[in-house]
Length: 120
Image (tube, rainbow, N blue to C red; front, top):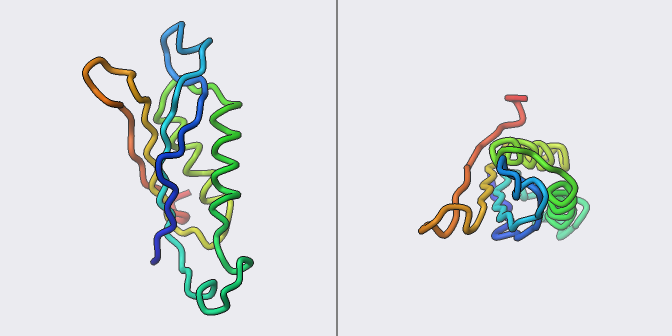
């Protein structure tokens, strides 16, 4: 399978368990890798045959900005579902969600999950 990637998507949203995290949006860094067969898109040079990463990115941005989960684990699972639901050609997805500056002396903290279409 081929990989379609969205790297370092920086969005502001509510995520966290502390009182200040529940009221003030913070930076959330999202990285996504989607596995799909891109041969038809390449052969026909046809956008209709491609997984539209712009549509996926917009859906992720909207979700992060409008949601308010307590845990990054939940946010990562929700983003994985968005990716799998966006296009039936996406067979598998890996999602990394990080909170830059959330932990003293660390650039960021977060989780990485991997989900397959058949596992749902």
